[in-house]
Amino acid sequence: MSEEKKKGLFARLREGLSKTRGNMTEKVDDMVRENRKIDDDFYEELEDILLMADCGLKATETIVDELKDRVKAGKVKDAAEAREMLKQIMVEQMNIPRPPLKWPMVMLLVGVNGVGKTTTIGKLALRFQAIGRKVMLCAGDTFRAAAAEQLSVWAERARVPIIKHAEGADPAAVVFDAIQSAKAQGVDLLIVDTAGRLHNKKNLMDELSKMRRVIDREYPEADTRCILVLDATTGQNGLMQARAFKEVAEIGGIILSKLDGTAKGGIALAIRQELEVPVWYIGVGEGIDDLQPFDAKEFVEALF
Image (cartoon, rainbow, N blue to C red; front, side, top):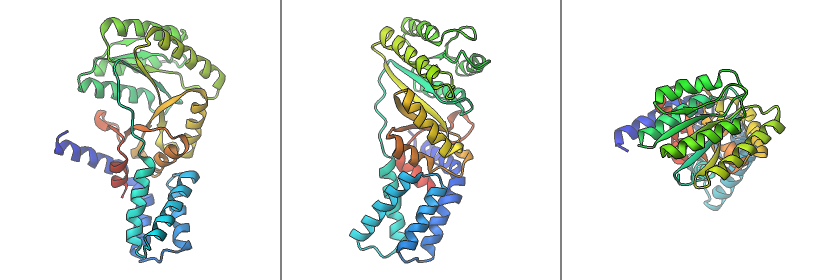
């Protein structure tokens, strides 16, 4: 990637995280500027700041405990040095590498309605097409009215084929047809939209299991990944959704959408700590290029 493009991506990420920075990082910087003594009050205040940024209890405790250990081991007295240690710990906490992509691949995108799943699918299609991959979409959400139409709009924008059935059709049957078509056309990536009915877990579980069985049977050579799309603005509620989806499906990765609209970007830390699943991509804006591969070091740098 050219240096200029990389700078552009970082600027967008930085801009996207500006609300979180105001909420979290500036408060940490205030503590450092005051030449605070590193004592129990310092750690307590830091805990409050992290919790308010939606880092979650588990991640917050882990980070603060690790910081205490390093400060003690290094006999650190300077709050600014402790801040650098904090950054390093956060990078380490979030750094679960994404597994290498293998082709052909099937991405099953799951997530409750309203998280930006359809838009994310469109952005993924454009992203992979831009690097020369042959992409196809599958309208597996046959439950929600107009879901297939919305996906068709993105298929048109990305100029990729889409397989869809009538509303109310069996999602597994749509997936079956999409697989046959993908194999016939030599598609690299098949992206499947799914229904976001978390309130009816049993139905959702049955539906996802059935889709997965069809993929495993008809397309064993494909690398199949179940990717969960979460709306970052929902904070801890998003974490609850993630837990619930993990109960019904084997989640291989997370896409965090709408990070630009939240002051609680710490949710990325909470998810990593609770689920031990890598964040694959983050959405930091409405534009087509605003879906970026997640990089823990860049994320923390943009935060601070």
